[in-house]
Every structure is written in structure tokens, then in C-alpha cells.
Image (cartoon, rainbow, N blue to C red; front, side, top):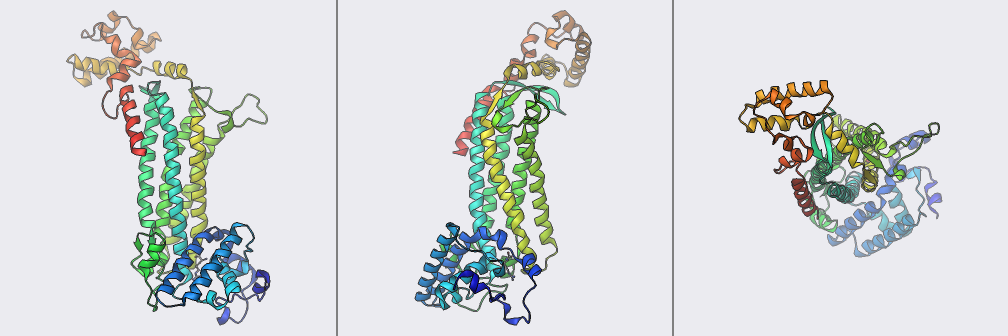
Length: 467
Ligand code: ARG
């Protein structure tokens, strides 16, 4: 019997015994998840094999059955990998599709696989297995992006740029220091995924539909076979909660937040008004009407896709908030947001790591921008404090000097000593050393400061902690 033929008795034989009429076609379409949950197939098979082996070890089914199940599932896996498996909407979801195929292949042994199990604990297990692997991919993606940022930071550990607050030139920083801020963010993001993985990595199987099962199962054995750190300790919780998925999506949202901020900066910096950087052509597109344009599409899309991931987080939180214990069909709606979150995040991390390698920096323009806008005004105030003036007074004195320089359309460092002394008699020749960009940078020489020596040290520390 082919897969098609066996499914042609329209009713879903897994549960149709209780029903007087077949499910309406539209309802089938509405309730089926096979269109999207088939990507869990590998994990569904893994989980089934571990479950069957446990049933065998506990003498709940025979070892012959276990062998038949393993062999049948191995064949099915090959069919799926070869793209030859026919997914049938009539069979609702990935679980029933695989189970039906198994039963067609091996008969009664296939029908024994579901002993002591429900799709409720099965699907929760599948999602956790998939998400665990995905979290590992994300952690690797975060690492690669950090390494890419580190390379750029290293090349520019002493490249001067204006540091901004309120998007106004504030104080000089180095580009390396600026980039290392993102490395810090991604470091915390990585910690979040590592931590979230611990809570993903618990086994729901054994919870069965909601209350556990009357068979003498060994949950620890299944957990061990599937590399889980332990079992979910309450059956109702095991089948119904999806907090691990929400946590993952939240951690993903934060990564996207960080990358969206960086994207916004890349967009600004690459605009001809700033002209701080150039993004490699392979990450940009042109305009169909304006020949001069080179648009930073990739960072713009990262910024846009961030909203999409936030949407998934909101969807998942909302999905759970009204559900009474235990499993409800609502939970089937967890998959698409979760899958799309992972897909969006993984591809974003990958493209970002490559894009950062394709950035060229216009050091001259960055430097020029840092030397406009009185970026070293704070340094002058600090200079006066070191000469004995209280900080608030120094702040006032420098504000007056800045106003004077603005009127004269010159920088503070362009004012002759006599004019500066007019504002504070404490000022002497040595003031020009602190008014330079390098003087300002080098003076912030403590852990977390922007002095190039500190940036270098921060890069070295980060490399060590990443590897
Ligand atoms: N496709 C379902 C899901 O994703 C599997 C669990 C179905 N359980 C049930 N009692 N109908 O949640």
C-alpha cells in the first residue's frame, strides 16, 4: 500500500474511532501543522527511538518490536532526507505522518510505539530537541560575529572618532572602543542563550497526555539517551508550558535590538553626510531611478527584521497567557514564530559577520568630525580642576570659552593662550596637550576607558574569553 492509498480512508485512524463524520476539509487545513512542523522530523525520530528503546528495556514492548521500530524509523529518515517522503495533510502533523508510515512499513510493532506516550509530551520533546540544537547554532553565530567585530576593532583600536550623546559630538573615542561596546552586548547575549539552553534541556517525555502514564517507564533513561540534563518534574507543566521558547525568543529579540542599534549607526555612518565608513558593495543595492545611490539595504533590513522578531515574542507571550493547564491546541501556534525567530536570527548573525569584514573606514573624516564640535571641552574643564578649580566652576568657565570660540568660528585649541587665559588665569602652555584628540583619548586610561592602550587590552581579554 502506498502512503497515499493508506491515507485515502479519509478518517484519521489515530483518533477517528470516536467520530461519526469525517473532519471537514477546511477544518483539516485549519488544524494541520504538517506544513511547518515537518522540520521537526529528525528530532521526532530521535525521540521515538529513545522512547522505544526505553519501552524495550522496561519490557513494556518486545525487543523484536524495538528492532523493527528502529529499522523502520531509519528508513523513514532516509526517505525524508532524500525528499521522497510524502507529507499528508490528512495525517495532521509530523508525528502522525511518521507514525503512520512506520505502521505501514512494520505493522503492529509500529502501533506499539505510542505506548505510554502522547503527542503532547512528544511535541514538547521535539521542540526542545530542535531548539537545543538551534541555541547551539546561535551561540556559534554570536561567536563568529564577535570575532569579526574584534578584527575590525583591532584594526582601529586607535582610530579617532567623535563619541556621541544625543547624536551630538560629545567626546573623542576610538572606533575600536565603539565596536567593543557591541562585543560586550553580544557577550551578554551569548550568556543568555547558554543559560536559556539549560532550561530547554529537560525531557518532557513520560508526561504523556498530561498526568503521566501507568506503564513502568524509565524517564531518566530516555533523558540520558537524548542528552537531556534531566526530566521535567511535573507532567502538567511538561506538556503545557512553552516558557523555554519564549525565553529563546526574548534572548533573540535582545540580540536583534543590539544589531538594530549597530545597523542604525552603520546607516548613518555610511551616508554621505557622515562619510565615516563604506559598506562593501555586495551588501548594498542601487536605486532604479537615482543613479548616484548606494543604499545600505542589509543594515536597514536588520533594523526592520528586529520588529518582526519582537512580534514573535509578543505572539508567544500572548499565546500562553490565557491557557489553562495543561495542553491546548493553541500551543501548536508556538512553532511558526519560534522557527521564524531562529531563522531570522541565524541568517542575520551570519550576514552581519561578513558585512563587518566588508567595512572600510574613512579615518580622515572620522578624525575631522571629532575635531569639530568641541569634543575636548570636558578635557579643558578637567585640566582646570587639576589646577585647583572646583569642577562646577571649571564647567562654567569652559562653557564661556566654547561660546567665544563658536562666535569666532574656531576650535578651542585654535584660541591663543592669551584668550584662553582671559577665561581662567590658571591656564598655561601645557593646556594644548589636553586639547588635542590624542591627549583626550590617552587620558582616559582605566579599565573601560577609551585610551587606545585600554582598547587593546579589552580586545585581548575578549579574544581570550571567546576562545
Ligand atoms: N501538532 C500538535 C502541536 O503542535 C501536536 C500535539 C497534538 N496534541 C493534541 N492533543 N491534539 O501542538
